[in-house]
Amino acid sequence: MTAQHVISYQGSYAAHGGLLRREAMDVTCVSTEVRVLKVLLIENDEEVARDVCFWLRVRYPQAVVVTVGEGRKGLDLVETEMPDLIMSASHLPDMNILKLITEIRGFCTVPIIILCKAQSDSERAIVLEAGADALIREPFAPLELAAWVRVMLRNAGAGGFCERDIVSISSKLSINFATQEVLVSGRPVRITPIEFRLLAHLVRNAGKR
Image (cartoon, rainbow, N blue to C red):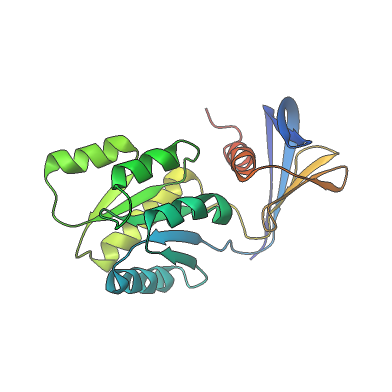
């Protein structure tokens, strides 16, 4: 599937020398194939992890699911893997779920779904207030899981870009979403994962208020 669309907006960010600077620009996005969904799954229960992976791939056959059993490792992978969606167990062997959510929210707005066993209303409210976007109670129904994933991706605007998006922001600045590169005058510049995600978020939400 191919698609081409042009998004124009004022006051976005350009990357130069590892820094983001504000300037007016036009964005042209050329999409060449269906985007591959990347999910980070933080789950120490192997059976639950296997079930989640299976049902995600039923709904998204091309999905890449990165699985880890510890919160600290998962936190590190948020930056290096740059997932479209994070799913985590509510109880992890090395980290309190509230601390995990708070640390992720300190630098990242990616949707977070928490897989939880029976919890009180107040416990669920605390998790949501900490920054989680949704809670799915175990044992989960596959249709509910798929529905929540679709809702999270739709709300985050993560469904409109393709795996090999090439975005030209100006005559000198472009972004390759497949390789996660930012090019200035045809030369790659070094930016941090957080800076790249910020730039990507601005481009994907161009024109929104």
